[in-house]
Length: 243
Image (cartoon, rainbow, N blue to C red; front, side, top):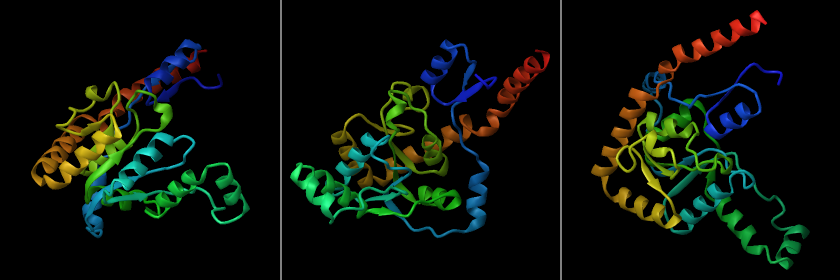
């Protein structure tokens, strides 16, 4: 209640605050197109990647994300994960033995398998460069997003020009054309099938990547939001001063 307004990229959060008499506005993320110019100017390495995921991976808020990535890895897909994820550090000590006695050994083995493919996290131009040079890049929402597509990665991947494979959400079709501008899956099995198919079909994969990037650069640039956002801020600043 110490704030005049709350800006959020998730509609259910907007509804929550408005229902509690705290003014909130829905402000979806977007893409800063000048990043592409900076990427070209930086002349970074163009190492090719088959299938990537760039982002956080903590089992608490990202349990579904962890399980999907683990399933893709177990399926033998060429997955690379760039993350600051950390799991157990007690693999071989007494706690490990206690966990085995509690029948949690499979959980620990799964974590060890994930750690074997996790590479250091990427930020800034290095991250965008990796996305740009990925044949496919994954987006999997945080669990608290519920059934709503909302995160920044939707626009980071498409804006950089990669073919995005993302988990299905109820409002996703309002943002992109499914399986034409982005690739959508509802189950792990569907994700495996679509990824395998797209890695073999260069023409279709590139077509989707180009369509996704075009949509993002046309409709979801941050510059498109500036006038609207400025208006909202000015209106609320004026009201705040008058009271």
